[in-house]
Image (cartoon, rainbow, N blue to C red; front, side, top):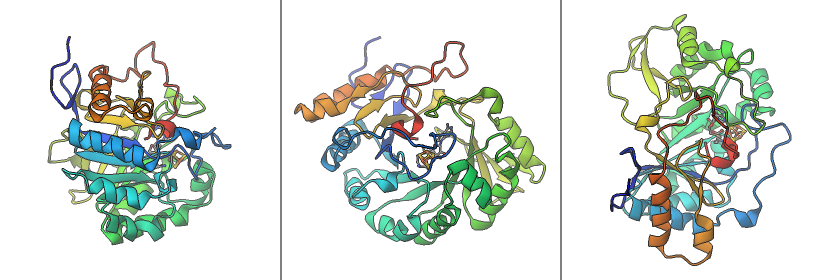
Amino acid sequence: MPRPDRPELVDSFGRIATDLRVSLTDRCNLRCTYCMPAEGLDWQPDDEVLNHVELLRLVRIAVELLGVTDIRLTGGEPMLRPGLEDLVAEIVGLNPRPRLSMTTNGIGLAKRAPKLVAAGLDRINVSLDTVDPETFKTITRRDRLPHVLAGMAAARDAGLTPVKVNAVLMRGLNDHEAVPLLRFCLAEGYHLRFIEQMPLDAQHGWNRADMITADEILGLLKTEFELSPYPSARGGAPAERWLVDGGPGDVGIIASVTRPFCADCERTRLTADGSVRSCLFSNDETDLRALLRSGAEDEVIADAWRRTMWDKLAGHEINEAGFAQPIRPMSAIGG
Ligand code: SAM
Ligand code: SF4
């Protein structure tokens, strides 16, 4: 089927990508077991990572030429990127102004939240899989829970609201913590989202039997809370939501594996080294950095991005027999 001549990032199944995930770096200061090995990874060399001007140019092309309206900064750990506040200010200065959020492990946020707000950041997702310091140390291989909690509180106090919390449960590690995590988030006014563990770890250690499924998470929560369907429609949002004990608090589950939402996906992804991907699980990607560095015009780059998205597959195929985990891990794609 030929691609229709329209500017947006449309694919052959009729979806339009308006939500851009930008990875600012593949580096990280934690070592979450479901993401990377204890020794870390071979980080992308500096000269392969998009510099500030290159990154901003690609984001501008996405906003001005391709109809992207929502941008999420991620990584690796996005707060390790030098010049982050400047980048935030320049992205929100684009016309039309995109909505801008960031996914972070929260380390350093206690100090930087007000500066990020002043620069124009709208919202934040902080990853927190446990409220127990020992479990935190086991999962992330670092003793930093107090820093993360302080970062979340600072984000809330600075107005980066609602603060959303991403949690991954793992069998035998923190699956007993679903209820305490939700209690903590309700008390603090954070919006908790559980994410099913996906086969995206650098070690390729994902095992379906160890994954805590959405049904299991619901079962765990229902031992303590009454959950009722969230009143408003889900739209393209990946999380299915429930009101907790009649509201207003809620909880969400992103069931990427057992209840895939690919048919409603609105995402496009840019890696820190300048490749565009149509899906977390893509096996193909398009190197926009090479185009940038060879002097290509904006429209040539935009067209390459459009072609990549046109070829987006119907779904991620994790549940198909021939599924192959992508070569890049989550931390190098941008989660
Ligand atoms: N470092 C930041 C953080 O942890 O929030 C941003 C990058 S991290 C890759 C983005 C999100 O992906 C985090 O919420 C993390 O829990 C989640 N994540 C990482 N590996 C995952 C996996 N194998 N399955 C499901 N979620 C994963
Ligand atoms: Fe770092 Fe985020 Fe991966 Fe944890 S999930 S190792 S914080 S990139």
